[in-house]
Length: 377
Image 1 (spheres, rainbow, N blue to C red):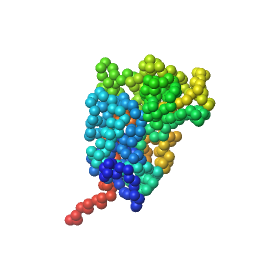
Image 2 (cartoon, rainbow, N blue to C red):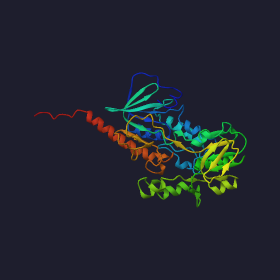
Image 3 (cartoon, rainbow, N blue to C red):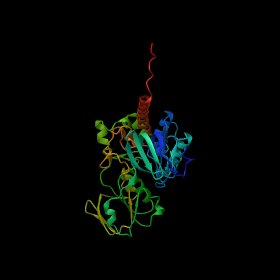
Image 4 (cartoon, helix red, strand yellow):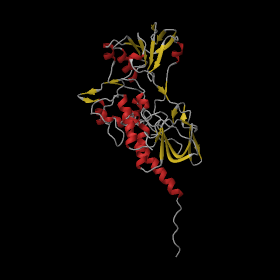
């Protein structure tokens, strides 16, 4: 059953459904490994909580652009439909993911939120609101961006202050008139601050110094250089990988450009009261009317009821493989390399995990087939 056939429906209930593999999450990571599982002939299902494939992308702000050019944005088996060295916006990405699921007739079930994952004697039990799936192996492909994080200072602001997380931000017209404080020095914060600065005064609060990389160098896109030099293959366990995995990078923007646009930079927000925000350098911003919190996300694995898999919010895994046989993760930030959570680079991790899933499946099948006895002489 393809994603478009199942669109807008929920499980109808009934007895538990037995499959070889359950994939939790139907965005790029889930679709990438689904492509491999299909070619291996495994019986599997992809459970997607949203109403459509690509809904997370479609719900982002209107002007969002990928910092990876189109030639680096493909999942296995299907090129991204855009010219090289162009930078897709959110809706073409969502359209591509929908087309991908439909092109390969991947068994994606929509509007199916997993409420509990537990271990059984011979595998796993995956519970949703309306059904239960049993599988020998499970891939958690829910990605790194799950629950928007807003700092505690937000709760001290007056109710008259409009506050939105970058996950809810759409465009400047959707915000009240007047100055805006953007909090967060990542790629989202820089992009949103630059967009807002075209029509209003903007202050951008940056907690720490972040390295900034140009989109293009010597006539080539940054990712051409990163792939050519092998930097996207640097693993998290290497000396270089350990260093760079601790930091985020701003790509395609910089402070000089934003200052030219009129953005005023502020240090980390440390407190707020009423309509006043206080920063780490003891300065304040008075009469704050609008705040955009571009402060990232936190993972939510409360539904995983298997001891030892998640410790203090972090998944205990090595290249996506946990210590629980048959349980895997895909699409985590720096799961194996910098590309592990990027649209066009998750394919490598997906192929690696799929091979291990197939090997384990074949071993289980072989163990259940009675050995052929030699005929007696």
